[in-house]
Structure formats: structure tokens, C-alpha cells
Amino acid sequence: MTIHSVLIANRGEIAVRIIRAAKALGLRTVQVHSQADAGSLAVQLADEAIDIGPPAAKKSYLNVEAVIAAAKAAKVDAVHPGYGFLSENADFAQAVVAAGMKFVGPDAAAIRLLGDKVAARQVAAKAGVPTVPGSDGRVSDIAEAAAIVSRIGLPVMIKAAAGGGGRGIRIAHTLEEFERHFPQASAEAAAAFGDGGLYIEKVIEKARHIEVQILGDGKNFVHCFERECSLQRRRQKVWEEAPAVGLPAEVRKSLCDSAVALARSVGYSGAGTVEYLYDDVSRDFYFIEVNTRIQVEHPVTEMISGLDLVQEMLRIAGGQPLSVRQEDISITGHAIECRINAEDPYKGFMPGPGTVEALSVPEGEGIRFDTMLFAGYAVPPFYDSLLGKLIVHGADRVACLAKLRTALAGLKITGIPTTVPLHEALAADADVAAGRFHTRFLEDWLETKFAASPSGAREVA
Amino acid sequence: MSKAEIKSPLPGMFYRRPSPDSAPFKNDGDSVSAADVIGVVEVMKSFHEVTAGIDGKAIRFLVDDADAVMAGQALAEVEA
Picture 1 (cartoon, rainbow over the protein chains, first blue to last red):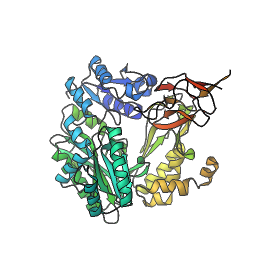
Picture 2 (cartoon, chains in turn red, cyan):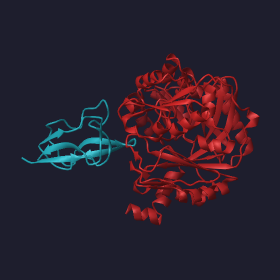
Picture 3 (cartoon, rainbow over the protein chains, first blue to last red):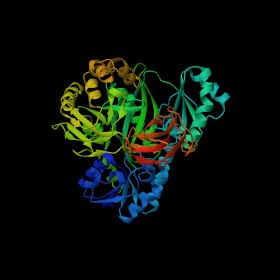
Picture 4 (cartoon, one colour):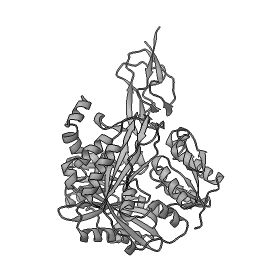
């Protein structure tokens, strides 16, 4: 491999995850950190740590100059951006390469192309991937937009071309609503993303969110099957599974093949995810977007495939060909991941940073807890609320759910509120057990089932 | 002349403006009423408004825009 050291331009559980993968490959690890993260687990585990600025992410983890300066000072061969922060910032990827280092991910051109939602949709369509009925590209004229709406039918989503991660989306149920939202959405997108470009998509009602993990080395491209991420709150994933529940084999094949076709069409290099909406009734799937980074929920794919995706990313950045061929990758059993956040599910998910008094982690075959926590750690208020991810693997989904209930009972985090009780309730729910869910399921369920449960009612009162 | 402190209800990042391009909620010397928003605290990527909680003639901020604050830290003082 052409790289011998890596700088981790991230924090939290994913920084810990990357350090472990890098060490397994014998790489020297350098962790950058804000002043709020000087005592973090990633800083303790890395071979070296470099302070890159004040707590505010804008002044540290999002500060391209500070991260590049640290990488140069530490003389690393590569930079791993993790997820969030600078992971999908093409200018950052370019700056890393300009400074003579490898960026662990696709090149800046691919990040830029796939990061533009309109361009990505055109790439997908060209590669033969079905797209949601909507505009062919950016729409700026409201009359033109209204004509598209009458062709595809209501309700529609008005999306910011530069948006992503669920941001910059508005839904219109009537033409009157559409005409009111359209100019507002454009002004908002211009303010939020510096780009007022919009596009329009039909709303697929009761759709499921299914995504395909891809790997490429620029010449060879494989998929590592799909993940189901339909349980979401405010468009943020809460619980993920692999494989998708009850997906017919022929649909799985065409879905995964379409993701590989897309990767091949752009000569993709690194790990990536192609996201789709899936309609259970018609069995149609539609492209949403490509994420050019490692995802939070990557461990469920690792559990069913036996691959180490982060090690694979580092090897690809080090100039090695993919370590696996498509025929080497298969699904064994079922995996579920629960995102454990520092939020109080009984108080409207109010965030609760603070000090972890005690931590007890379940152990056993097929149980994994990816986290940056330790007893005595003070969770800072400046970053997202993800504390860790409990991932469980079983021979099938029934066995996996049973093991998950035991594992959740064994996970004790005291001193701060967490979303463990939410996951305990989901793991015991009949609809979840039957796989009867879609992307709007969780928000309804929270109102009708969770808040109405005896413990929920007591805590809310 | 008595003074009262407005304290941060949460730890996080304190902002004196609703968005980076907007005018501040309040300037030093402005009068406030109890229900007025004087800033927002960002905690774990969610935003929470801070209200004055007291009527007063003149407000004086003790922290700058985008300063890190602790729960219970005085953000401003108000002349009653």
C-alpha cells in the first residue's frame, strides 16, 4: 500500500472507528480535534493529536485551512473525512490532493458531480437507474414548474439543488400551495446554500428508504447489498437494517445492479451509497441521491457481509484494487443498528449533553457497540447528539430482534438522557417485528404509540 | 438601580442574531420586556430561544455572538 499514515478529519464515534481500521492496517494515525474534544476517546487512541481550533465546528472541523495545515505538519499520506463535516466538500478533497496527500474517498470531480442533486439525477437516468417522476433538471420559471406539476400529479416535493440530508425540502399538496411555496423555497435555498436552484419530484406515498452500498477502485465496481433505513424522525435515520425486510430476490438484484451501473458510469473510487425510495405495492424503486462518503449505518452491511468497509476505503486510497469480487460477497443472516443519541425521547427529543457517570456495554457474539463514550466522559454540546450505535447480528430477522432486545437491556448509560428507551419500545413493537413500516411510520408511531404508552405518558406529564 | 442577570438555560453556542446575515435580536442599551427573545442557544445542532424573562430599561450583553456558554452562565444583565 502506498500510504503509511492517515489523518482523521472528524470526531466522535466515526473517528474512533477509523482509527481502529487504520491501526489494523498498520497505519500511523493522527487525530485533529477542537478545544472541546481534547479529552476525547479518539484523541486518546490516536498516535498523535493536533488542536485545530475553538469548539465551534466552523472554526475547527469545518476549517479547511486548519485541517490541511495540520495534515502537512503531521506529514501524513492520507486524510479520512468520515461523514458530515468536510466529507462531501469537493474543495476540501481538492485541497488535500493539492497538498500532496490522498483523499480517502472519490475525487473532487465525482463529489461535485454527485453532490449536485440535479446533475446526479441526470447521471442516474443515463445509467438506466429509474428516477422519481419530476423535472429533468433545474426549474427556475414558475409557469414551467406548474406545467411539470400538472403532468406528474400532486403531491410534489420542491427540493433545493444544493440541498441534501433532508434539508431544503418542501411538500405541496395543492397547486395553490405549490405556487406559494415555490418562490419561498428558491429564496431560502439561495440563503442557505448560496444556490437558489430548485427541482421538483413527485411524492411517493408510504415509500420505504432503501440504499445500496457500493465500492469501486476506478476500474472494478461491486455492491455489498442493501440497507433499509425507513425508520426516520425529521428525515434523520433512527434505526437501520440489512438486508431490507421482505425485498423480493429479483427486485434486490435489479436494485443492486442499478447501483453498480451508476458507479461504473462515473468510474467511482471509494465507498459510496446510492439511495432509493421503494414502493412496496408496485415494487418500483426510484433513485434519490448518491452519498460519496462512509455512512453512519455502514456497520449493518459489515455484519451481514463480513467486509470491513473502512479498511477497504483506506486500501483503495492506498492504490490497491478491490479486495473482493462481486461473487465473493453474500448475505449471511440479518443485522439491525440502533442510533443511541443524547436526547430525551420523553421530552420531545430535547438534547442533553453532560457527563456520563457509568457505562455498561453488552457483549457477545454478533453484538457490536461503536461509540466514543467512556465513564466520566463529558459529552460536549457543540456537535450532533450521536453517542454510539448498537449493532446486532442474528441468523435471521426474528433471532436478530430477540438478540437486540437482550442487548438493549444490557446497555446502561447513566448521567445523561439517551434514546435507549425508544429503541426498546421499537424492538418490542408488533408492526416493527412484521416489517410494516415506511418513512412516515416513526413520526406517527411516536405520537400514537410511544407518547401514549404508560412510561411515555408518565414522563411527559 | 437594580440589575438582573439573564442566564443561559442550556449549554451550547450562543447567538445574538436569528441568522448570520440578520440584525441582532437586541443591542446594548435596548429596552426589553419579559417575552422578548434576546438570543438563541444551539445545543447539539438544535436551536432554543432565550427570552429576557424580565422587563427592563437597558440590556447589556456579557458574551459575544457565537460564544460557547455553559448552562446557568450569565448572558446579559438588565437594568430594571
